[in-house]
Image (cartoon, rainbow, N blue to C red; front, side, top):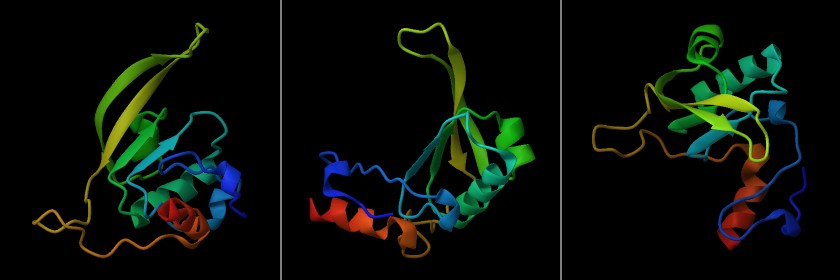
Length: 131
């Protein structure tokens, strides 16, 4: 859970080694990215709950709309999909880009509520903000 200074890349990228099941939302992130492998149904249900509690507008993943929207209840709409291949490999996957259905923003474009940082990400956020 402890964020090590060496784990921070230049800019606003931080890698955490922690249990995502301990988080309750994806706030304050604007984009959520997840792989296809290693996501059992119980985790996808938890991620759906987190997504639906968050204000992140975009989800990028390798799960189809049938899985994400119909199966796990993510409050999202498919924007587009793209066939991807791994560099140096013939292995390919379909990538999907989703947008939140209700972005919790006011008509002026501002967020309806101030975005708070989930407790599990607070140390990382402070590290990024410190530069």
